[in-house]
Amino acid sequence: MKILIGTNNQNKYKEYKRILNIYAPEFEIIGLTEAKISDDIEETADNLLDNAKEKADFFGKKSGILTLADDTGLFVDALGGEPGIYSHRWHEGSDYDRCVKLLERLKGIPEDRRTARYIGVVAAYNPSINKFWAYEVRVEGLISNEFGNGGGFGYDRIFKVKSAGKYYSELSEEEMTQISHRGIAVKKLFLDKDFLK
Image 1 (cartoon, rainbow, N blue to C red):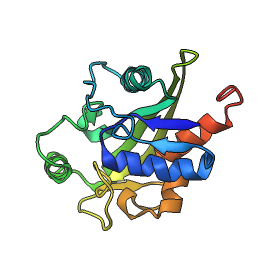
Image 2 (image 1 turned 135 degrees about the horizontal axis):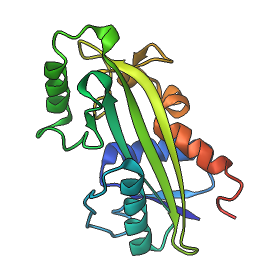
Image 3 (image 1 turned 90 degrees about the vertical axis):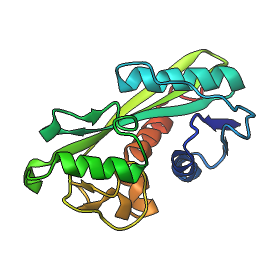
């Protein structure tokens, strides 16, 4: 059985593939290129759940394959929740440019008041039975004054995970599977007794 990862973001695709190889090793994980899908869908909803479901629905119906998609935002308390659901579109340029902009906006605010959280919604859509599953996961942390080590993407190099005491970008693959919103949501999905019936 196949699972399609409904994203054009290669970083997300690789993360999902790694997580699913742990929780669903019997499945063949494919991307949009392998499914011969070259188009994309614009995020038009004003909330993470609907954006995630729209993407899962769009790619699931195009492919006819069980599809996972997500929408994630970084919500910074000192900025009234910005960048929020617009995290990727909040500022033009690269992930690095967006991190720099965020640090500029937080200049002068002490680190203990830079509380923030990643909120992610992972949606699964099965086109053969026209059914959705969705899980929201929050990862608490704060925005550091400086960049951390490691790779990651989005705001990972400036987001310190409260439960781990280190940057998202510094988490090992095993830690990411246990701590990240995608890892937790996928685990919940495959523990759902109604899923894949």
